[in-house]
Image 1 (cartoon, one colour):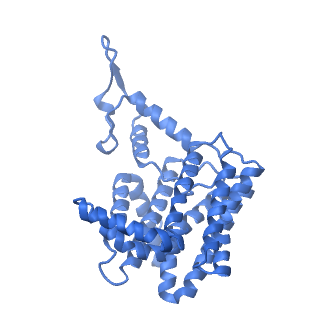
Image 2 (tube, rainbow, N blue to C red):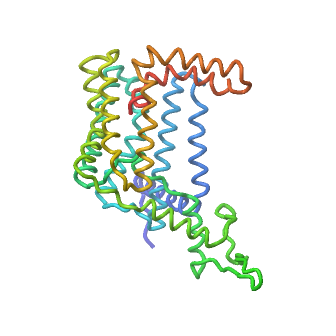
Length: 344
């Protein structure tokens, strides 16, 4: 028997191996841990000094935890992403950047001030643009979706694990001779956390349909669609450049960014054959156009007073709503100061 590797590196590898085994054996408890960490991030703001930075750190850690656990479970279930290995690495780095960008901005502002904050913003946006352009132009990844890697359906993975535990690989069912009703035998009853109350055939159909939708290849883009997606990818860099040229109080960066987003969506609107993820992404980008009402200078000159008046009105005249609207009113000024909340 081999001797265990001594030293910090050996202990760290052993700890990582034990954690991977725990995630594989207890995916439901892992999901609960992720929810607990994320819920903790909502309770921290306003409790003490630097609570906003700590809250964002916890929230970023919860997203990274989900990314790590999904990777472990995909490896265990032999369900890797339907792309090449170099493309998987680019998607992983892009996901890590999106998980950490807000905390990196807040941490840089705390340590290095405004100069360091804007330097981090430019570096992150530049890195994201390069990764997205590589995916778009080199790997022909099609429309860039958010998040870059779809979170694993834990319920489906649990049910799949229970199904694989049976030697037959399928549920044992009984069909009534008179009623023709399909019933599950007691021997094939799944564990409580993955139990469902539909017919066995329904579950298999839903799982196969969901897997088919998630594994659909990206829709090939023509020249017009590639230009549209390139505009969307480079829009943050052009916005930062315009901020440097005309300043944060100027209308020109706001108008330029809105024009680029609307142009990109207009050019993509001619595409009819899109898979489910791509349709959801186009819908998400369209809804995010409402963010321009909350972005300066439009927010400072037009939206702020009306939004605060509406929130105050709801809090004063509708019982219970103030529990949500008053903290939101207090948080809006802090939210406005974070670039990646507004423009990321």
